[in-house]
Image (cartoon, rainbow, N blue to C red; front, side, top):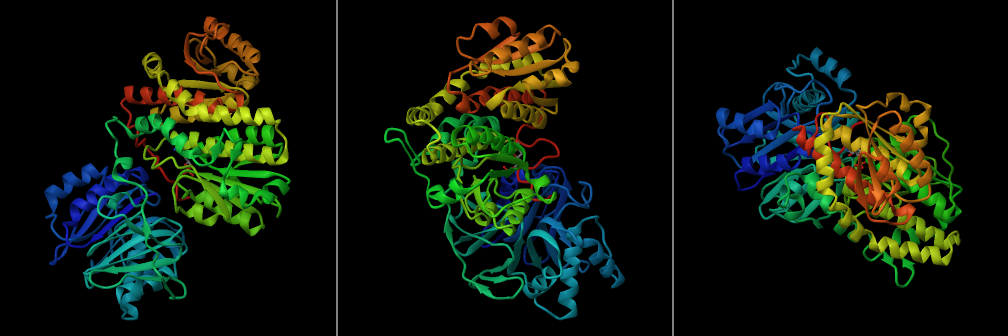
Length: 615
Ligand code: M6R
């Protein structure tokens, strides 16, 4: 978590850094800070709160001139969010300033050692320890700042993306990464450093993504040098042309990124299957799958690892893979998998799902699976992300940047990719009849249109939100393919509205949760007309007879559930397996409106960050 931005060039650094930090606030937003160099000295402003609070403070406290600087927006790991713990941090001499995203795991012994050597500390952070460690090695061995950073990083255990500025070498910024992302924007006579490319997309479309254990010294008028931190070997900079544009990372007239991203789903689902789904020819073409088809077909099982919403997409995939391709699937939280000594066989195929491609637990689980010889396939959204590079092969979801902390379009595009894979495997294995295979292909092609129709439920969702916005609790129930959607609906509500919500398989109700039902309890039931329809009608009756308030997601034209439910949201019909792509839409809208009505910060919910790059 945390976002970092640095600038060196001929522009005013401050506005570039502030605008960039605002774009990175999805990574953390409990405190923010900036250090600028204007040719005379270092100007520091930092504060608990958002980047807008930093702007206010900086306007009062510092002159914001200068064309070099580094900034930070924080998601606290070590030390509570307050002014002192905010970044940038300085070394004791006040010469070295640093911004950091990640965790220095061995900061305590390092701090102890530095204290013995006379260093003092203002903050509770691991980052201040690194600032002083750099200063210490620099002084001890009379090193230049670049070398000092390298030597210090070789003593550090943990994860980092850092940008370091030394007043004694005021024409350069040193940056490095291990486990946390870092991109360098290469402009004409200017450089940018940032946690992702969004802070510099309007200035340059040339970017270098540092690999793990690489560092770069960027300075004006000199060629950039990238080195391996461990062995000092030089690396040829690989400059990529960025595919994202400014429009994609702005709100485009919507009040919130989350709403924009909900409404983008018809388009991005189309983008996800474009060039892959050929319904008329009865073909699915995915290079990552074709190149590794035998591995999938020979696999005794598929293991899916992910976190949060991506884990929910994995659960939907479990149902789809087993139904279509008859391959056993296990879905695991990456955070559990990595620490529980799992059985991983060489022939297993592991699918890692991640929107950001930076989730620390998923990354660690991938490394573990690889150590055991498994083939790992990534389903990521962010192109060039750590997970996309760490996996043996993969398929991008092509959802475009997802800025809202609550995942929406990531979920539906992940399901789209996973469905395509399952269908391709089913075709290769002959586990689906030809007619069913063709039917699914055609139905998948219609999904964007049906998602658009599902978005028309917005007003109904808003009216229901108004009735239940003050509920302290909420239950979400679904069966079969829509059980994971119930989990996802509950996660959406709790993370952005702070209402306690639980998702359950509808039939599990009577094994405990039914005790919670009374006239105060809203129960959202996903009840499209499909395989378990009669069963879910019975579940609704059980809730009704205990006076629970029922909000049902039903297929357009439904009669039976309509009679029982207090509210219905009608969605277009589709096949059972593809229904999560539709049923999830009104749940996203419902959560969104409840959160807005409760005055919550929808795009930046408390305590959360978009990419969880710490474990
Ligand atoms: O980037 P990832 O898909 O790996 O992120 C996983 C979770 O952190 C993420 O889905 C999280 O649960 C979202 N806030 C859910 O909306």
